Structure formats: structure tokens, C-alpha cells
Amino acid sequence: MSLRPTSTDEGLFEALQAKRPGAWLEFYDSYAPYVLSVLRRVMGPDRELEDLLQDIFSLSLEGIGRVREAGKLKPWLRGITVLTAREALRRRMWRSWLPLGNPDEGEEGVIPFPTTTDALEEREVLWKVKVVLDQLRVDDRLAFTLRHFEGLELTEVAETMRVSLSTAKRRIWRAEAEFRTRVEQDRELRALCAAG
Image (cartoon, rainbow, N blue to C red; front, side):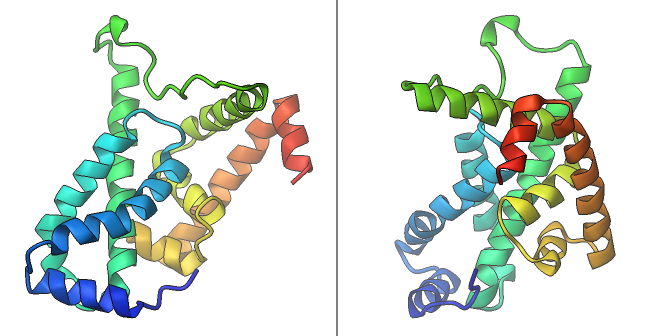
């Protein structure tokens, strides 16, 4: 994954810094698919993703002046994305412990209903992976998904989560051990992981 800015990134960065009309919309159009893909990987299938996407770009608008070069734009945005996801996961954990909310609202984090047999099987596997991930500590889950689902290098995981390299490694190791333990308890997930 190359973080080297393209000439388009450079031009967009300059337009953002100069607060040119239309620059913010272009920034959103250019980076929203990337942010959404990171959110999907760290949160799993979730109906809150679109709201989180808006929150992330609102935070970006407030903090864009702190970015000093075009090459730092994507990692900076990824950091905001992960921290926003982290807060959402923590809020969700608190809500699960407290008897709050409306039972008529339906299941939170629901995966959309599938329309084909393959989609049904995929949905079931995704749900099982999500259940396993939901049982991990929030910081461990984020480090694990950034490393294994987003494909970041260890240093990038540490930078994104704003922790030391040793802390990032420890979180990934702990999450991997917990993930393996939980996968071993499910025959279908065990077979899926064995198949690669």
C-alpha cells in the first residue's frame, strides 16, 4: 500500500490548505470510499457506518489545518477513522451493559438481508467473525483488524492508533490468541481459517 501522494493529492492538499471553494467536497469524494473501507474492516457490517463516516469528515474539517504535507493526509484520516470507530465500539459496549434503549429499534449492527444462497452463507460467516471480534477488547480488536484486514505494517498500526510499536504488537498478539481460541470453538470458522 503506497502512501506516496499523487499529483492529484498534492493539488487537493494545497486547495484544502488555501480553503478554495469546492476543495472540501472534492476531498470527501476522493477519500470517503477509503474511510468507509477502513470502517467496514474495523467495525464489521454495521448500520452505523454512514453516520460514523459523516462524523469523521466533520472532525477532519475541524483539524485539516494540522496536516503539514500531502503524504500525511491519508494516514491522518485513517487515524481519525480508527479513533472514531474506537469510541463507537466503546459506547456500544457500555450500552450493552446498561439496560438502556428501545427494544423496538431492532438489532444493532445488523447485516443486511441477503438475496442469494452465496450471500446467505457469506452473511453467516461474516456474522460469526463479527461475534468473535465483538468479544475482543476494543483496542485489541482495532489493532488486529488494522493489521489483518486493512493490511497495515506494524509501524502503521502503531502510528494510526497513536501508541508505541511494542504496545501495538502486544495488542495484536493478544487479539490473535483470543481470536484463534474462539475460532477453534466454531467448526465452520475453523474450517474457513484452515482453508485460508
